Amino acid sequence: MNDASLPWLLATFLMASSKKGMSAHQLHRMLGVTYKTAWFMAHRIREAMAEDVKSAGPLGGKGKTVEADEPTLDASTAITFRRSARASRA
Image (cartoon, rainbow, N blue to C red; front, side):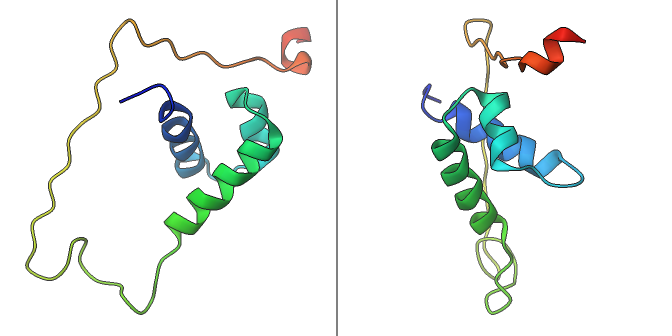
């Protein structure tokens, strides 16, 4: 995994794990990217998460096997979140 894919992975995780959804502005604050980038990422991730009713079926196709690898993050990969000014005052 390269450094460019890390914000995408984090944004996908945050959006998938939030109960009430995640705004682009919240992604902007949490990931430390520009609002324009956060908006673009949020729209792409929402589009990828949308269920296509026409082709809804098994992942990979009927009778196909899907294999997936687990990403490995070691100690050299630093994941930091910027704190907003409001959170640091509390």
